[in-house]
Image 1 (cartoon, rainbow, N blue to C red):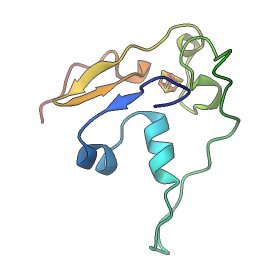
Image 2 (spheres, protein in one colour; image 1 turned 30 degrees about the horizontal axis):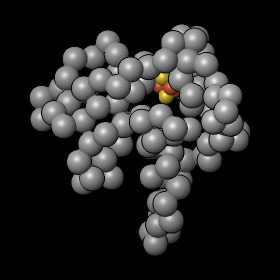
Image 3 (tube, rainbow, N blue to C red; image 1 turned 90 degrees about the vertical axis):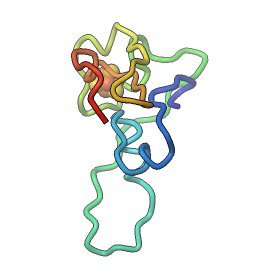
Length: 100
Ligand code: SF4
């Protein structure tokens, strides 16, 4: 969930091992690791938006490195991307559910 909106649903083991939504990936990448060889991705820039006046379109778009023009205006719908997994992101809208 980001800024009050569900961005991804999946069984816990699947979500932790293979997050798909850009926010899920960033969130799990921020978890401390005891592995010194682990290469951490850059921290997500920006601030969490106000829930009283969230950004239009995808609420994560001001902070998302993958944001496209449509992300600024179109709310991504939660859709099935594979068995037992739903993701709300325009990156996945042209893809049919994958076999798992
Ligand atoms: S819909 Fe766009 S801004 Fe939102 S997470 Fe997906 S790519 Fe990023």
